[in-house]
Image (cartoon, rainbow, N blue to C red; front, side, top):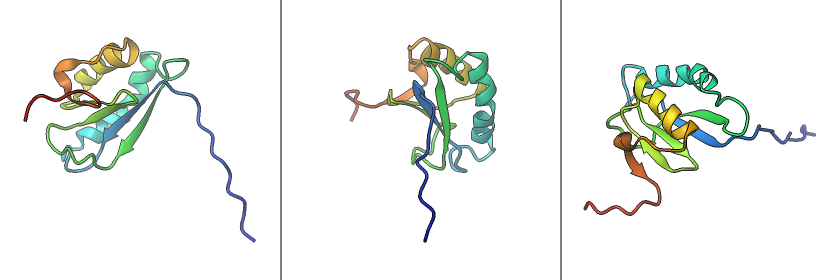
Length: 117
């Protein structure tokens, strides 16, 4: 007889940061380095616990393979490109902590009406 499946548990979080670490997003490893830096960056901003806690996950491919590193903030549906270490600091401070997306780095906003064709 097989072992019963254990129901997983996860702590509450306010936002989920998805980072593409696929080789087509940034062949030089910049995406993985960005992901690896997030633990310290989120802790320094006070976003590793409490009401504004941010969970982070690696994604192997978003199929948006230009302008990487690519980061998506959920449940906001905000997609960022060119997420360098400095740009990540801006996203953490402005968007994740203060709730104001860094518009010049946004390339897609879920639910937004797009006028360009």
